[in-house]
Image (cartoon, rainbow, N blue to C red; front, side):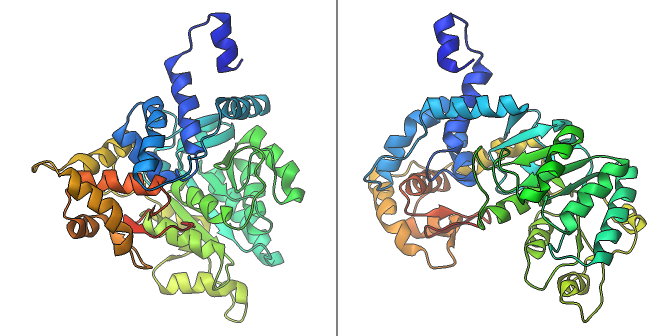
Length: 391
């Protein structure tokens, strides 16, 4: 039953349900990415208030045309389509949202899940590698994944051809697996893995950040890769070329403080170049499941907080200024001048605040307006950059 139908029936809508509808509208709004979403809910903890504030914020940021905010009906239909598949949304900050994923600097504000959501909060190990994997690599991956899954580790991979599919297959022999996909949950990719996705949804879990009906395109895959990295205590790379999505996933996992494992390969095989280079850089040389079990931590490093601190910590960064209030003239000048301070590599927020002579609290507010105005982009590294696709 939709929000409107519930209202007409006289049933009082649960506040959590109302909030979830508003959260998804925020997530699907033009110019609202993961960092902007967190900044909005740090400033307006009630998602309905954040939605109501969007037009004024975007106008203050220099936007001349209205933001594209999805109508309530579109969001209702997305909830309904997911429910018909048997899935549910998990929102950042909710009790069921995976704690380790929330520790990323840019966690997805909402993920859609088919299957057992508790697996996302279990002890996970990611396995990624080449799509054009060798026969030996596929056999090794299936056996390796099966052995890890038998030790009560949940295997996380991306449902791609090659190593990913072999990792899922091996895990289902002895345990559980999670597939993270780049498109919507109703758009299996590649098509030949549609039956595999159905099996995983029945016996494990399938996760998507993209809206229902979204066909995966190239820029969606790095977003998927960060989810694989975020869910996992450690990441294993098996057969990866020198420039590949697997190495991007390894970099994301390393930046998040996860353990990196790499299976060595023949020096003359281009599919081994990436993994061998990771070993040279300090990744764990991995030949057996025992190599992973010996080095896998019980939890991520102590420098990471807990799920409960995710939005609160962002809020502290935005409101920690204890000095005199900033003048309206200085704030207006910052709106005009800040985009001009950004080079191709961007500028740290604190440096931008110094250049604009604003407190951090005021600078964060101006950045939010400029983001919604389409004039700047907040990178997950903490730098403010010219408008661009972050992935």
